[in-house]
Length: 476
Ligand code: NHF
Image 1 (cartoon, rainbow, N blue to C red):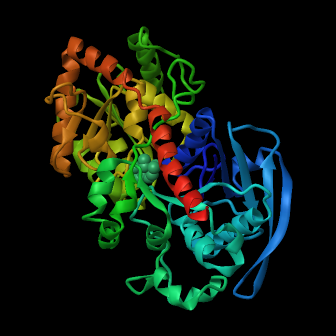
Image 2: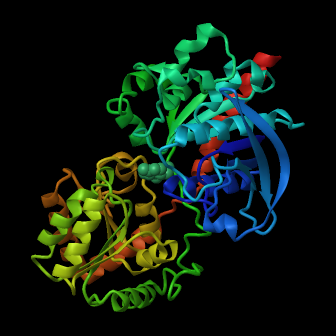
Image 3: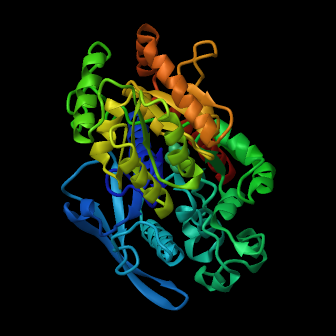
């Protein structure tokens, strides 16, 4: 079966968040199952792309609201991600040094149309197009309704919602962007008076997935305006838990680490990585190290962290390290904290993939106080590297972490989301750390968990097959 993923991000080519990790891993695991999975993404002007070579495989143009845009499709010649990947270059729109900005509508509309124009010329079309988030969510409508893409209308489509907060809506004044379609289908575009790409794909795609089962349940009640629609379309919605790429996220072979380690050498290996981090950021390596890695935004609960850290540091027996960037006010507070708690707290405001790997390897605990967490990959990376997760019970965090007080529990779960609960959980972490035998056995327990993509890739295959077979039955 041929499965084509369309996404704004794909690791390692362009990464803003977890979407890139998913699109950079799932196709590889689908290929391992004997399928043919590939990716189409934009050709940005970022440092990864500028450091690599590509060859042009197709050139053409698209017309949007009377304006012609030339585009090129490029394939890499200097790197291999384990599956076929094609990048669409559109001067001024996509060939810029950012992934998301204020002009995303024009940029990603042109991206989707270019991808489909190229697809029309393919001799053997994909069996399934898998669209990720709202940047690719107009494709199910374009191919099923627009005359221009009549040749593609038999291809089955899947939408994966990585984050329902972002829906890509825009005004009906821009309806002229769409190629011609039967006017009685205009209702498919509308959701609460706006053209809403995520809502359109929920209505039109053959299947809709969310990145964890619990997130799907949550969305039925709270989905930034889409809850009613999701309930209506629930018959075609499935929650499939994300996995992680265990080739990249492997403490035994990870090239970013100061020292590699296995289950057998974990105590020594983690201490070596912790010593490095603590020396670099003047923290005490004999204290338990609690880390936060992520975007400094409200959805991630990052606005609560400064106060929670201050409260946790009333007992200065812990070291805390934060990596991330985002809202300016949160960044400022973290920097202030660094000055006030010089020997217990430090942060790196920004993002570094290498530093992230080293932090997972050094950490004893990771705190994830998200208000919304569709799946969350950080707790999975942390566990693979032997760090105990401290999480709120939302989205995929609830699906993947069980509190130590429950049978077979291994993490710390927060029932409420506020500064006090976070600080209290950090004290719980400190107490756990004091009981060396218990802490060591928990570390081994979390490292033994298997969150590789193997199982979830099989679930996606089952889903693709169900719609592919149905399309074929309808055709015959
Ligand atoms: O894991 C990849 C990621 C999720 O919870 C994460 C999020 C965005 O918020 O599916 O997408």
